[in-house]
Amino acid sequence: CAASARRTNRARIALGSAPMRRLRHRRWCGGENGRLPLLGRGALPLLCFIWLLAASAAEALHDVTKSDKEVEYGEPTALTDGRDLPKSNETLERRITVLLDEMLKSHDKRIRPNYGGPPVEVNITALITTISAVSEVSMDYTLDLYLRQIWRDDRLAFPSNEPMSLTIGIDMVNQIWTPDTFFPNEKKSFFHEATSHNSFLRIDNHGNVLRSIRLTVTANCPMSLHTFPLDTQKCALEIESYGYSTKDIVYHWHHEKSLVMDDNVNLAHFQVGDPYKIERVISLSTGNYSRLTAYFYFKRNIGFYLIQIYFPSSLIVVISWVSFWLNREAVQARVAIGVTTVLTMTTLMTSTNGSLPKVSYVKSLDIFLGVCFFIVFASLVEYAAVGYMLKRHRRRQAESPSPVTYFESETSPQPANGRIRNGATNRLRRNNNRSGKHSINIPMDHLDAEHIVPLLVAVPVTRRPRWTLRPAQVDLASRFLFPLFFLIFQMIYWYWYFFSTMGAVENEELPPNST
Image (cartoon, rainbow, N blue to C red; front, side, top):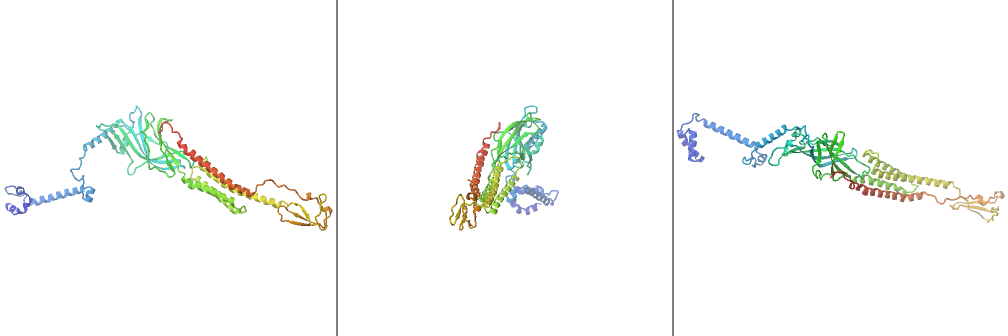
């Protein structure tokens, strides 16, 4: 053993100082006496192999616990250094677990807080994130909101030197008492569960409980469409306890800004006004219940209806006036314009009312379209009247005889006693004072005395009416009366809209206890 140590002494000079070499010499060679241990020379390679296996296993375990950043970029992180790792406060975790277990052991979710005493005050806040639809046909609207309920339950209070709150999983909601809040005017609603249930529960050391839920609610909204599409609708969202009367639960808005609407809330057909809220007590057959109501104003945007209804219907009315400037003899053109405009207005009215509820009262849009249809139909009737007057005038002109105004004789016979005497060379000519085109020569050669008639009897006297309405006058009057009537109607219609309908919301009085 001493010889072997001398042979390897030069190779181990760099391994350490002389005392270290002597220590290794004692370990490898069996102490200062130079005797090997009982295991023999084969123990040294076995020990080295075991040491290498242990080092490899430790390095592999270290690689498994590396962070993503360290594995990807090869950079050390604070969590990879054992000196930077905070010590896990297992004692605090165990305390919270024990605390929650103690809460649930002494908590009965079937009984409200302070049972038999004053009612529980539930404070409500709501954040409106989106309003997706307002439907006139189904009379409802849909909104997304964060509903937060705050109440106090002394049974959930826990000792703490400093103000402290615990955010707990939603599973604990089923193990504690919560208000049975619902929406009386809802049609349907649902919770959001992507990627998990969108709600949380928070309890502080004084027993104050905060529950927040994300909901989508479709609520009923009775609408008055008398001024449609110039209307402003007011829709409500009501919050109430389903089973607890005012003896057990009283709802309050938490503070002045409990009802907040997100700035990104926009609708295509409506302008959303500022909401307001009220608190009230309603009486039902089962008792008095506390109810909170939030009101939302929706003022309809008229731009769509101006482009799709008001402007086209006004142009159709103007087109119907073209027939007043056409010749009265152009029957086909004037009839085609009148019939086409009437059918177009009928189609426009049918398509517009098809997308609206079947209400029994007259809407503002119905008044406008009705007046336009009346003007278009009156234009068609006007030509029918003109055509009838023209036909009657022609018939009267054809049936009326040409009156004899005077007789002329080539020999200028002298009448005696109102009679025309016979002469051989006398010829009479009858003139028409209206046309002046007809001249009839009447031979007087073979006339005898018995054929001579008085002049006044031969000429019938017809009186022409002082004033008659001619077709040309009807067309001329229609050119001015129809546009004047439509212009006056437009002024009255839009004046009533701008100064009556728009000021209705501003002058409306808020209900009592409203903010």
